[in-house]
Image (cartoon, rainbow, N blue to C red):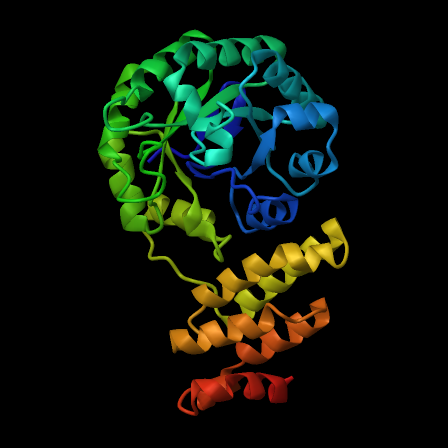
Amino acid sequence: MSAGLQIGDVRIAGRVLMAPMTGITDLPFRVLASKLGASYVATEMVASAELARGRPDVVRRAAVGGGLPLTVIQLVGGDPAVMAEGARMAEKAGADIIDLNFGCPAKEVTGAACGSALMRTPERAAAIMAAVVAAVSRPVTVKMRLGWDENSHNAADLARRAEDLGVAAITVHGRTRKQFYTGVADWEAVSEVKQAVSVPVIVNGDIITAEQAREALTLSGADGLMLGRGVYGRPWLAAHLERALAGGSRLQEPDREERLAIVIEHLRGSVAFYGLPLGLKMFRKHLGWYIEQAPWPEDPLERRVAKARLCRLETPLEVEQALSALWSPAVDQFSNSGVENLPQLVEAAR
């Protein structure tokens, strides 16, 4: 398997990419995932219109920083001129790649004729691509779905237009907009896009394990793959899958000590970036996923109880201490003592 992808003039070290995810791939997450070995982690979806107006929370979503192998800023919008201006701002901010969102299925996005709604208006989508490519010197990529619904699979046609307009790579989520995230991703259908264009094609959707990664690449013929919800609570997943695909090695999840260090670094990064109390608030969803994904305690119900408790703690130090106690080997001896006692046990261990 070839190591890496070439997108325009940008060389990406690996073939396992992390998708842009609102509320997830903020700067603290991107720095952490990159430190753990991810070669490509996109920003949260950034609304071009609000970016151009300088809205603080939107500007923050496009934040760049040290410790990143490259910066990929994803833009969403429906007006070609505004998208072009957003792209120019992204380039000035340091974007190595500018990605256009033609795939978000959220009603608040499609209702504004953006995201996957643009697959229903290919002329508008083409106008956006043309305007953005003309506005910047950085490679422009597009992330789309198979189509709006089962009766309008037009990803291959839109991909051809994208390549003709100068788009450097295309990512396809193997579902229609109508499916949202239901059912299963159709990796084989992405092969139609791969056959239609010569630029790199990246397959996305339902890829969590090494077996799924291999199957998605085989069925789609894609040049790379993109992870989405599978990285919740597992920011190391891209790097692990990269190694598994390269050498066929079995994935090794972080042990207690490694996992604790990762979570604490993420927490501290979030607090440093957002300040308090916002940094802790923004981190809580990640904390919940970290606890859910960990194998300790063994009983899933006990983990849910622990998650509820730890996500109510009010200081970073309390979170660090409680999580250390929860994942301590000594806690295992309590596994038969009853879920109802877990909060007291955690408190006692602190």
